[in-house]
Each structure stands twice: as C-alpha cells, then as structure tokens.
Image 1 (cartoon, rainbow, N blue to C red):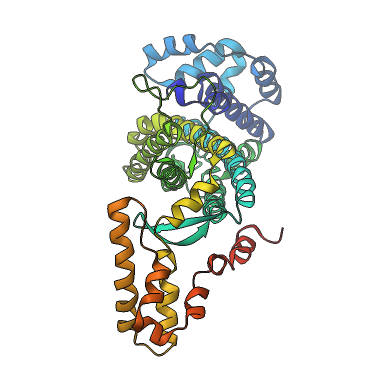
Image 2 (cartoon, rainbow, N blue to C red):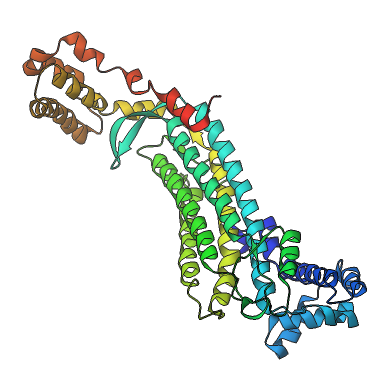
Length: 442
C-alpha cells in the first residue's frame, strides 16, 4: 500500500519487524508448552525468551538467508539461532511452517480488526452528533435522483449510522471468525506435537484453537473476513456518493469542508470539488477487489498448498490499510461537513409544491374518487408544474393554485382540505420514532 493512503498504526502491523516479532512469540510460547510437557528443557525455553525477547530482528540478514534457503520460515529460524545460540535447536519442535505463518496472519488480521472497529466507532460518533444536529432540518428525499417527498437531513445521517452499526457488528463477527490458531504439525494430525501446545499458544496470542487445521487454517474464514471488509467499503461508498451528489452545483445542500489555502483546480480558481468523497469511492473499489481472491483461496489442494500465500501477502496489508484510511477519511468528512439548510429548503420549493402530490391522491380516494381517476386528476395538474419547471429551472406554476382551480378536484375536496395537505410537518411526524429505533432513548 502506498503511503498516501496509509495510517501509521495499521501499517506497523504489517511491517517485517512486527511479523518476525509475532513469529518469535509463537515459537517461544510453543517451546514453553513443550517444556511443560517435558519435551524440551525448561532452561532452554527460558533462554530463548531471555535472549530474543527484546531483540531487534535483522530483516536484511533474514532476507540474505532466504535468498539461499528459498524458505522464509527457515531463514527466520536460522537468524533466531544466531541470536539465541545452541538452545535454538529446541525451537519449532514438531511444528511446520504453516503453524507459524497461519497463526501469525490471524494475529495480524485480528489486531487489524480491532483498529477497524475503533475506526467505525469514530465514524459512528460523528454521524450521531451530526444526525441530532440536523434531526429536524427539512430536505427533499429523492428516488431515481428525482424529488420525491420531504425527509430531514438528520434522517439521512441516521440511516448511515444504522448501516455502520451493522458494519461494526460484521467486523466483530469477522474478528471472531479469524481469531484461530493452528499448531498441529504436518497435515494437522498433531503426530509430533501435543494439542496442548496449540491450546497454550492460542491462549497467549489471544486466539482459539482451530478445530481441524489440516496443516493450514481453512480459508473460508479468511474469505468471510475480506468479504466483510468489502461490505464495509460499500457502505463507505454509499455515504460518499450521497455527499458527492449533494455537493453538485445544482444541488449544493452540503459540501466537504474547503480549508483556507486549499485549491480545487489547477486551471479554474473557482472550483471546490468533492475530492475526499471521490477518493473514498475509488478506495472502496480497491477493498472490494480484495474479496474475490480471498474467496478463490478457499479451494486448496488436499491438506494444503501455498497458492493462497502470495495472495494473502498482498491483500492482508492492502485491504486493511486501505479500509483503515477510508474509514478515518470518511469520519473526518462527516465531522467537518458543511450543511446548507436554506439551500435544502429552497430546493424543496423549486417544484412548486409537487412534493405533496401523494397526499392529494390519497385524499381524493378517501373522498370516494377511484384511484385511477384520482391519479389522473393529480397528475394533470402536476404536469403543468413540471412543464413550467423544465422551461424556467424553477416552477412558475403553483401546484396548490392549480388544484384549487380544478373543478373536478374541488368537487371532491374543499379548499381547506386541499390546503391541509400541503403541511410540511405531516411528513416529519415520525422522525422521533425513527431516531429512537436507531439511537435508542436519548
């Protein structure tokens, strides 16, 4: 992952030094358990910790050894023996490389999930704050991109809050799914290492034993994990696109914060572009792209092969680092989002009252007019307003006025009954109920 879209804490999880530190801890904890079982001397297990616990592993030296061995775990173990000395011969007793690699990857993915959950918490806090700020700020709801009926801007943000609450729950589930450990030896039979060793390592590393590892941890777990990241990314894009639409010049109901000194275009000094949310759309595409190879990794040959390995070396860091960055960028957008209530009100009025058409339709049917006739009566008046809007960019014909002048409508509804159906508050009467469903009693 390139530094432009990276945050240091998540990047640190995937750096070689961090990976080798986890490898060492897996090996050292396993040696402790073997010592408790009498397989290796307890003094040797202690020496391994004493000599390597605070060591800085020489990444260049490990790479140098691997160029000869063509095997990364053997290269690490050789370097570890250079640090520890003769007692290093007791490391990796009865284990296989996948015990180290798979357990390490799951430690990294579990810790990455912890950071991602914290990221979502920041976003949720921002969404809740802004949702209550604009709980009763009227704006137009749109279907197919076209004005439909009134909502509030707070409801838009409440919807996002509910969605990211589900995202958080999915990440928690993905963390639990991936938090397994395999120390079972070749083909996963424990022939040369006791299951108690796996249980000990799992406990020390914050994992649980994999029920059946077959030498590798089953990759359906990883597929679920990366698919979850893809779903979270899609939710990011959904909210990002909403903001992008709202920032369009013709709409301009909300926009990204434009900081002093910021430039929108190298050619056009007037420009204020939604660059952050456009960037989020692109990042979401990348995170989703990592889900498919994770699913293709599920089908390995027999007890194991390494066709998954190269994939995971790329998608592990790239997907988690990208999503970590995207969640924090989106939280920042929401925290600083500039909202224009007056513009929302003005846009809602541009269609000359058409947003109340359904109420007139229902009132006519309740007054005894067939639905087909009621629809025809409302639509013929609504289209006059639409036509004036198309010509002038704002309705010059008033829907209420047209209805009051329509003798067929007036035959069914009084003037007072018609005017009553143009009450904006009617559409917003259940906002409190929706907020309680989303946020609980506050």
